Image 1 (tube, one colour):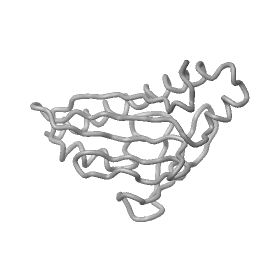
Image 2 (cartoon, helix red, strand yellow):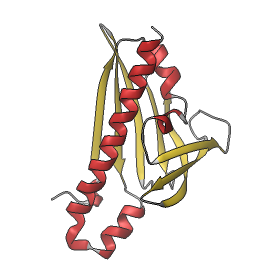
Image 3 (tube, helix red, strand yellow):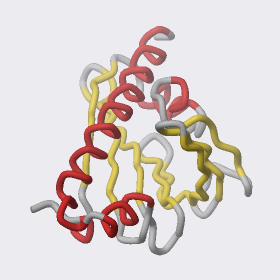
Image 4 (cartoon, rainbow, N blue to C red):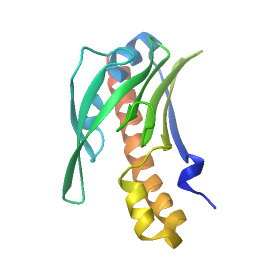
Length: 163
């Protein structure tokens, strides 16, 4: 059984016929994902970023419900990885990371999401319906994986259009 306390992970990847430098320009723009999926709408830096420790606010909408979240950059290695923790820097509700690796034909881009260990809207839903925890997580994973795939595919399109 998949449980929230186990930190469920989803990942999507795409091979891009562009250099890691070109892909990095795109993934390090915190607003770019909003162009290619339907939940995340925009972000704004609270402190100067991107850099480890920098904070930003993300604005989201799903099924008519709008909310914002505070996030902190927890991984920032130019040309390699860009990741952020949501809601609490030390006990995040989720952690999202782009990983780049050079390939013979360009770059492999992987978008990774790990739930928890901290609370989130998902944990509130699970608390209301504990017997449905696995189904709740599976439904959210399905939605987020589709959005994540849209983001990496959009980045691929942009990166390859400028090669």
